[in-house]
Length: 330
Image (tube, rainbow, N blue to C red; front, side, top):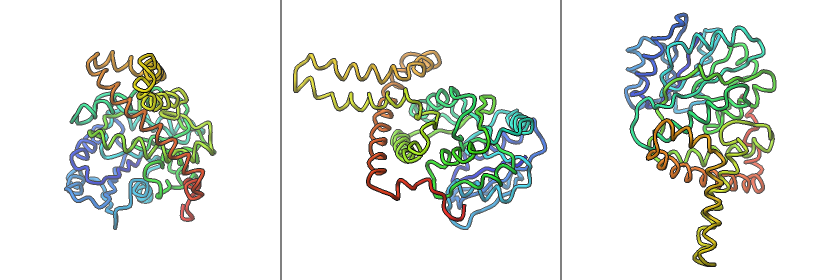
């Protein structure tokens, strides 16, 4: 087993990531840290743990860093692990068992624990619970990969080809699309770890916007793409949230009775993912659930705007429609 850890300026979490790898019950593994020209002490941290370190010539991005690590790997199984994630102790062993007993299985993906690796803010707690619920709920066969923690046999990687280095926000969707032409992808909730999520609302909303927008060309090619925001109910919830904002002026323009319109749309947005809110209520209590609901409303509005922007780009830009055409070197 080769564990490939792309890293850029995550020295604080890289220490926790590598320590967790040292505690793995599966012992026959090599760890390769691909440092993408970090300006912090990430390389020193990696050397202190005695792992192989590959330093890129320039900043090339996570997909290209994963490809570079795979080129240096000697293992029969490749485990791609982001440096801001600390695995549970038995994860590598479970991944090896799954991949070596089922030849139809191309990739096994994992999920995040509900608690963040390093809790820094309420926004980070929102993101941790939201991602845990969305990803864990998709357990079973899926059509995407979760690039922060996934494993595959080296022979499958060579057959499918490397990740598309041109895609820094949506390489997971494109790679899943390629893998499922030949193999199955399975999400197993026993493959898990604690992740250091984004702790600023601006960053979270920006990632939602760009990922939703960039996924539109792939959705048009593959309507059966599943998981997370691609869930049809969640899509309607995002649209309901956007239209609730657009309908907010109606009471002032047409009278108080029109207040029912944005309220009904808001209720519909919440109902579209009601199980998530119930989970948060049970796990974190009512006060945090109210905060969570407010943040997720902003997320839903952001995703809906991104969908319309992405659809417009598909109409007017042939280059955008070809986002998922592979470059010649892949």
